[in-house]
Image (cartoon, rainbow, N blue to C red; front, side):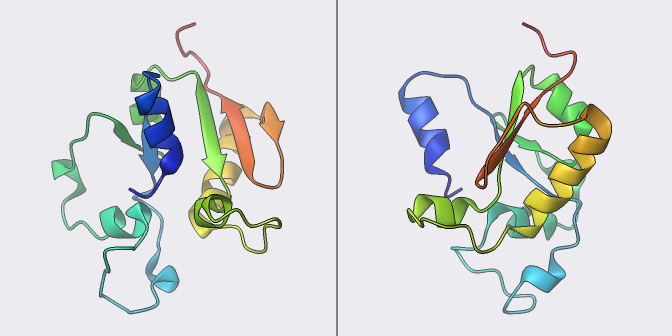
Length: 131
C-alpha cells in the first residue's frame, strides 16, 4: 500500500485504518488488461480477488462495505481524491481517482455533506462511531 500517511500515523502511534474499494468495477482503470503490476493501486489488486470473503485484514477496511467501516470504530473517513498526485507534491489536482469519486458520492448519500473538503480530500464524520 503506497499510502505514506498510513506510515506517518503508525510511526506516531496513532490508530489508523487504511481503506480500499473492492466492489467497484475498476477494469477500465487497468492499463494492462488482466496484468497487475507491483505499483498498481490497492483497489485494483484487491478488487481482482476471486473470493473476497477470504480477504482478512487487521488495519485495512473495504470502504465499499459500510458495516465493515462502522466496525472499525473510526471516527472520521478521509477520502484522498488522488493520493499519488498528492504524494508527488503536485500543486494542482488534474484528475480525481475513480474510486474516490464513487465513494464520495456513496457517503454523501448515506451521511450527508463532508465535514471538510478541499481539492485533495473529503472528510466525513462516521455516524455512530464511539467518541
